[in-house]
Length: 143
Image 1 (cartoon, rainbow, N blue to C red):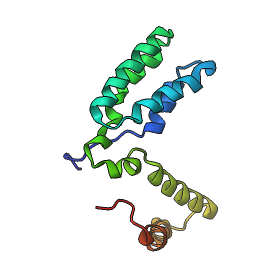
Image 2: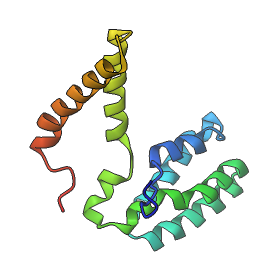
Image 3: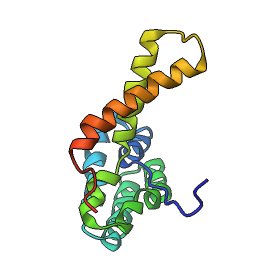
């Protein structure tokens, strides 16, 4: 639908995918290494740090984790193409997930709707409420 839109993979989900192939005893260490990648100040520095982390993971005999980092790191760097003031807001998709969780929670309470329009009206009412209160009172991204 939007061919020019950029894709940003959520860094938290990226970390979880790497942890899925990491032994439990080394998850904390790998977590610090991954966070160090995204703590860099430029896209070039992030790529260099990612190469270093991949080499460290290979030296720790975590080849699957190294492969996941190597293959997926570029998908997590789209936020670097935007001004640095916006990085913290667009690095993850937590806002969308929180909204989806709220809608799912409210629709499960009702259980079954008489028809599709009543479900749509319920969801739209919640979206209007959130837009009018939480998102309407503060700037999400200061353009």
